[in-house]
Image 1 (tube, helix red, strand yellow):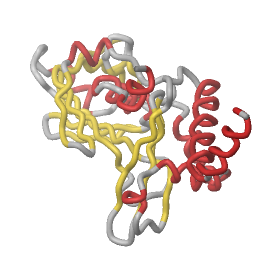
Image 2 (cartoon, one colour):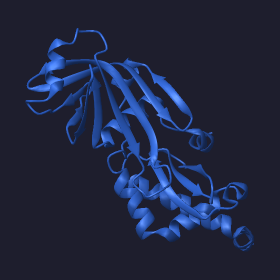
Image 3 (cartoon, rainbow, N blue to C red):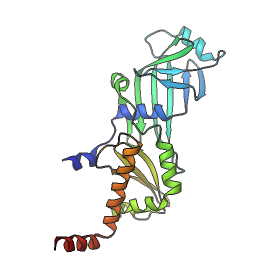
Length: 241
């Protein structure tokens, strides 16, 4: 039963949205004819509020002071960009509609509508679920983990492709790690004119980088076994004898 759950497990939409915000370095803010790109200027409170640090002369401050409380007064957009160079690097976008308030010199944005745009389409996330969710434990480390895997261990990526169904590997010209979360690793399989993504689930969730290393070793062991099933069968037969 545990293996079956591991194969199908994936982060819920609210968790994925919180993970995008936790890892994103920038966001776009649109309100009342004003649009500003903020870099390194946001934090997310435990209750889901987005706290923004803006310059004193920012037009956003004036809008926030005049916006009617309780009505959507702005839209925040966050992009989830794959850290490894790929075609179509935008993995998802999160749009938050809500209202601003000025708190302790910062803009506090409370979402009243949350939409996650991913490869499968748009998902509306309940604001209460968004507030209660927590980012994936690997979200802030993911960029470093994936770039290290792609740059320092291309042989491991090649081995992992042995776990992909042969039909999905057909015509592949390049395979790169696309995403990782506590439930699994996703590979991007690029062909000449198209691409596809394949998810390799961990046998159990990884609650941190240390556990991720063990989960990856298990995947690589499975990949090695898949490459030489006859030798493995002989090994087991000899051991039984």
